[in-house]
Image (tube, rainbow, N blue to C red; front, side, top):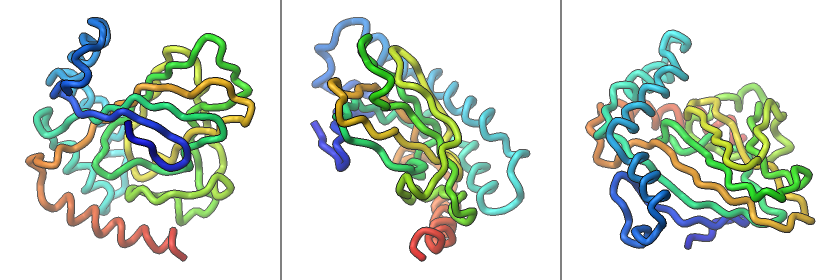
Length: 220
């Protein structure tokens, strides 16, 4: 169990390797996890990411080149980072855009049947109020009073919410109301680049330059 700041608790693991401590799960869960770890599913995820962020939708420059290199990845170059997540009352996840090694993120809601929507807990999509903070591939954080709500996805049972990691994938979890009586539970899994991936070294160079360029908007 890993307890993070802001009240989030998680049990994390990486697929396709099945962790020993999860082998006692019921057969339905084991089948689900094995399916997620299959090479064909990882390839489907890469294909979805390409469809969600087509290169011809991006202006020429470092971001387009970064995504071009990312689209060259193969199924053996990626893995699924998974976590069983629990967020308690009055906790929240502030606006951020996810780590730069992520490609696609999924959130499978485990809302109990008696979850009250007035408690909050939905996934929110944001638009920074300062134009220069709109691009954030490097995953700088903002406070909620520095962004506007662009869209939201209610926390309801068995809903799957997913999105592609981009330079504008601002999101977070709405604060849970103080009167919340149940934890906000979900199963989150993200397609990310393996540390040993066969990726062009230019990817890290461009990502570092982008981070240096973006930092000024968040440290001024």
